[in-house]
Length: 148
Image (cartoon, rainbow, N blue to C red):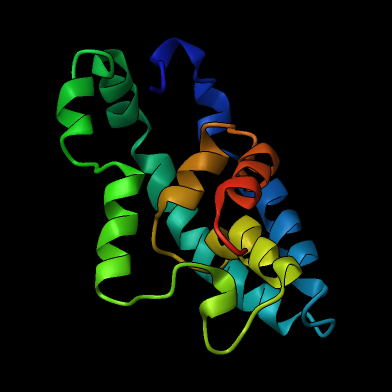
């Protein structure tokens, strides 16, 4: 469980300029013209500006985080249960089963950089904002995901 005391609230709300640089550099690999980077920055900037406005609310939630842990857990399901459901309905259970097929490098790129291209806030953003080691998380996914 995430502990509020472990959060660096300053890092949870990154400034715009370094974020813009990160996004432009990240997508320059895919599109050297810079158009993709500019479009992704346009979307991400909106998300980041809205997120920064929530700082007081996030601070209040973090102060209560340990007290609401049980409620937060009620919104999640064990990974094994989700795996079983996907298996029963015949959904792909590995990236290799997807059509079209993706290489490990492509999947890793999407995992690490997907949050940087949309204005919608998602779990990937939270991992970035709270400073989780996404490389370590990727390694764990790689070693536990069947047939990555």
